[in-house]
Length: 161
Image (tube, rainbow, N blue to C red; front, side, top):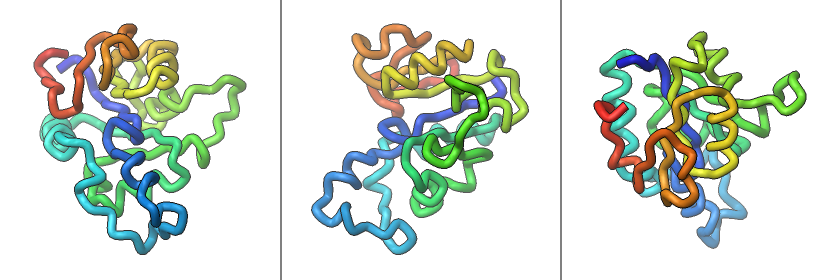
């Protein structure tokens, strides 16, 4: 495979954070104590991460969640992940900085050897601006600028890249 790293958007791609945030008890959730079950993972997450690890590819996650690392840990995904960057906790020194570029730098992989896996238009724009290959997860009309689009993460086929 020509790529050396995958950088995933946490919210909407790996984790169904809207499920967590829409629960009545969400306002009072202590993530250190919460029972975050596999229902919060989008279908196909563990299988894809395992495939990437078997191919010895680096994996980073970027997310808006203040406690992205904690969420990944509570869901049992930490062993797959090499780097985690939270938009809240990670402040780039560059004006207009790009967390996806920063993730590639922390992985020590050239951005052209990275794949950004995103589910939002904003992240899609950031990954394209970083000159990374983009996998869009979601509606083709929103992810149209992606290099390849899948409706769901479970549909991703590594041999397509």
